[in-house]
Amino acid sequence: MGTVIAVISGKGGVGKTTASANIALGVAQNGKKCAVVDFDIGQRNLDMILGLENRVVYDMVHVMDEDATLNQALIKSKADENLFFLAASQTKDKSVLNETKVKKLVDNLKESFDFVILDSPAGIESGFEHTIKFADVAIVVVNPEVSSIRDADRAIGILDSKSQRVKDGNFVDKLLIINRIVPDMVQSGEMLKSEDILEILDIKLLGKVPEDKGVVDASNQGKPVILDKNSVAGNAYKRISARLCGEKVSMEDIEALDRGFLKKIVGIFT
Amino acid sequence: MQGNQYSVKVFEVSIEDEEEFISFFDFNHILFTNRLIVLHGEISDNIREYLNSKSLCFLENIDLPKKSARNIVLESGITNTDKKTKEEIEKKVTEEFDNKLNETKQDFEEQKAVLAQENKMLEAKLLKLLERLKNNLTVLDHMIRSGQELNIDGDLLLLGRVNSGATINIEGSLIVTQVIEGAIRCNGNFMMISSSPKANIVFNNIEVNSEQLKDGLNRVELKDGEIIITPILEKEINWVQL
Ligand SMILES: Nc1ncnc2c1ncn2[C@@H]1O[C@H](COP(=O)(O)OP(=O)(O)OP(=O)(O)O)[C@@H](O)[C@H]1O
Ligand SMILES: [Mg+2]
Image (cartoon, rainbow over all chains, first blue to last red):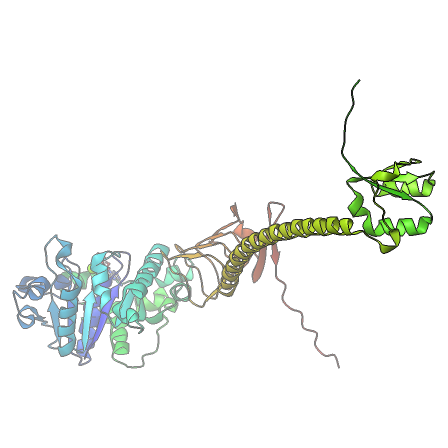
């Protein structure tokens, strides 16, 4: 039985889809069979970042309505044979999901994959609730800014009250990714420190991802940034993926990296 | 001329020994309440006063024609006829007493029922109060997250943070050991809170100036409609001096 991970944030645009794609690919590269599912109904994004947008024939709703089998709908990644992708429906009707259908889909995926990663839509509406309902673990993505932290806090609160695991008396592990950290700004006090964020949210730190222009380029090219050995964000996602696979990878103090040092690294490889 | 005619029973007596007379009336005066006592010869002030004190009707210094009188021997205390009257009166008195007693008993029972009812209500109230007291204190050891709203009837001891966007409405007193960044509406007797510059705290409908909260715990109370904030001092340790 695999682990179901919901990637959530509360606030939109903080990097859930980027995180989902990179982590999915990262654990696949670590030899784990992984399925990544786009739960952002009506707003396909993940297929683009994974470079699979033109290969979608059947989506998640087709599978749920049994218009297609799971095997027909799962798209194998070009980047790693352990990685499979299930697309979101493009329909504008968000009520296509219901609890029974979602549970069945998640249960099926769990049987054949080590990791099932669900990319949640922004907000705390029904789409979000369906994503977290049957998750074993939640990855909470935040940016180091007050509104993102507050919305994440809200999402965690709802997760804790709506999750099936919690209702069954179990615990949902919540892991934090602080994304788009700009070390200079943290040092100058313009950006929230990781310690402050952790104190507010009180969940485990999974990793810190620095701001990296390479992320946008990588996404545009359909090649997740984790494939770029020179990208600081990509390396951060590598460490995060290794941690998820049970490796003990020490936490890098990205905030301490000064620009000169970063420039030096960039200079060496470019 | 106008006259009134009464038909009264008359008790005629002459006083030989005043003490004897008084002790007789002490014992029997109730039998003479409806009678006219006719006394032979002059009587002393003492006797007059005594008869008045017993509210008895009497005439002194009068001799009635001997024929109409029945002789009564005082030594025997009471004559037969008087015995009958006494019995009658006693019966009447007993009856009246019984009636009164019954009435009082009834009143008593009624009052007892009312009291029992009140007692029951009081007991229920007390039980409720006890129950409330027992459940009055809530202890929470987790944080209150954004969007969460706690509504608490009694007192609360909160060991976690109150995050921005969280709300606590509380009727009782409040102790929060960690920082507050959300909203507090407290109507209790006191609050113990730490320095919380981002919090919005309203205590008994008055907004607390969070700038006045010092590091560590502060006691927040109301005195004459004004908020009093007292920082809780750290306990001083008296080290043993060698
Ligand atoms: N570490 C990073 N450095 C720079 N840009 C980043 C980083 N992470 C994400 N981005 C950019 O931020 C934007 C939003 O990212 P993404 O689409 O992953 O967010 P999202 O949370 O999935 O958004 P939505 O809520 O709309 O689904 C994208 O343009 C992405 O390339
Ligand atoms: Mg997204």
